[in-house]
Image (cartoon, rainbow over all chains, first blue to last red; front, side, top):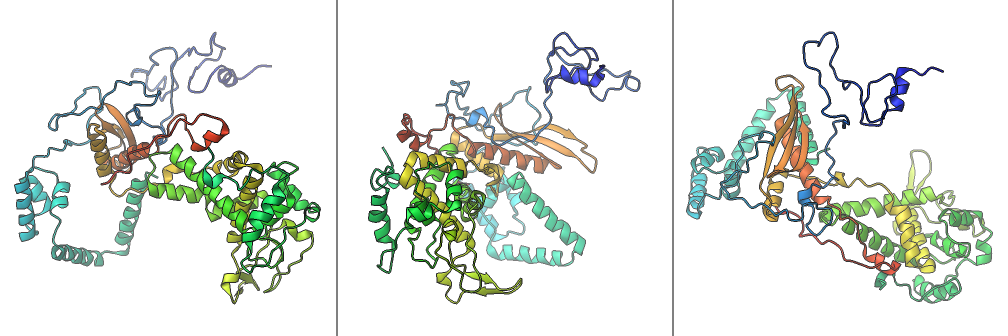
Length: 199
Length: 332
């Protein structure tokens, strides 16, 4: 009985290790050709084929991160499976960024918390915000005092009268929306709830 | 050391069951004062359903069928036999103890709300009703407003209760005039399942009962990662890192595709210094960042010690080593 090349290959392959050989290789761990990629012999002959780095290649499929996997940082030091027992908690200075060129690029130019606003300045922020919330917005004040917008909204939330004015304006805008626009908004809110559950 | 809620009134073997029943179960059972007799063992032994239930639960042949029949006799039923009130109470305590022990020892960082939801998922009314249905417990046949109750052998292996609502036709439901006298199917079935656990606890002892709870209740799959709802995950993760003395979290772009197309995708990792603590995906960087923070928070809360020690291991003859106790939930 003659077996098809595919059957022969699948017999000598283990999951995650690909070998593209019609004849049975000497060892099941020895791939005898390039990995099955989008590389096409004819059409991509000028570009470099992607070759495995060594003989044994692990090819995990791209999957969503599982929350049941605990990162080593989160394992308490009392446990034996924490490999680096001497790994101390890194307490960096507030203004020093952790930099490592081997890590992927930062998403945004986020900064560590600076703790630069003094108590007097907080009082000043509250005063400015209470006086004229229309001009002294969260964004303006955060730029003025060199701190994050979240901090401004925490220490000096808008007066209730200004909040109700804004809500009224928003309601007026929403009343002009078409049915499609309204549905799109509802859909967007539902999607955001999904992000927050990561589901 | 046996926890006091699991300690039976007296050490029971097969010989002392009758003593236990008459002294502890029979006396407090009846509010009206007159004693309700248990089903005679000779009568219960003739019932096929009770024998089947005993075999399905893999109980020993010496396990009294009359006790099993009592477990199925809910307080609303209109017969002269003993009701399952006391057995149900004992079973409920056993379930509460074992389930809370299991959750808090297995996931010691789980927030209180998540613990409550998980306890309901394991030992709630719906779950217990489902377990009872899987065991093959059937409800007694009722006809008309007043259910047909026969005190013969046939009904001893069935769930006996007075329904609160009776379906007269397909669309018409008749509600009992005195609703306190009836119970819903779920209430009755869950109380019967609890009472069965209580009966096993009383006769076979806590070790066997805990194994039974493990096999039938805790073996059910509960998705713990779906119990969370965060309002501001990035802030919460930041607070966590500050509290624990980790480097403040940063978000790094791990992979992206089709940035300027209608279907872009981004993969973002949450990092604390050099350590990757979470990963998220999304069709916008904002979404991927948010998901990465949620993933990191879930990974924190769903930490499980290995091996997991339970206080109840102490009386299975194993040495109790204590459990991991966490600092508590993150306050934003």
